[in-house]
Image 1 (cartoon, one colour):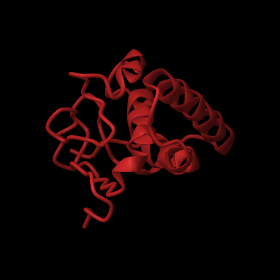
Image 2 (tube, one colour):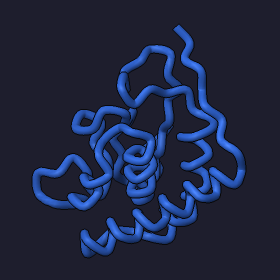
Image 3 (cartoon, one colour):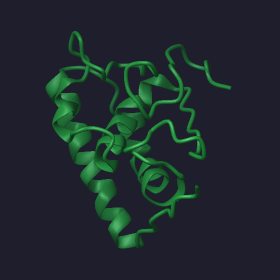
Image 4 (cartoon, helix red, strand yellow):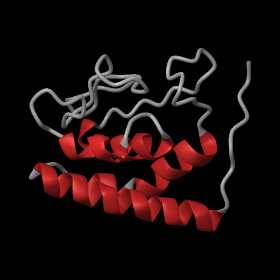
Length: 128
């Protein structure tokens, strides 16, 4: 089964990228820690991926025909969390749990804790 990917206009993508940046800053400020430069710089990339490029289904994250996204730089994971929340993988309110004890949203991603993540990463260069 192939799902039809939505394609957004450039102005819509620019607006979404700015929303992602705003939520990213709020999330990092609330957490009191976390890297900001890399994630902010990747907001446009993750917006394009999640809203125009990747074949994915937030309601069925294990869909066999999905595209696989590997982000080996765990320091940039916060932008992925925000993009995933905006795409519907989980409630945007959960972003405010970043780096809290027991949260699914840690400084580096853990694949088994959050459906939609394909890899666990930590040390730089741990990707493919």
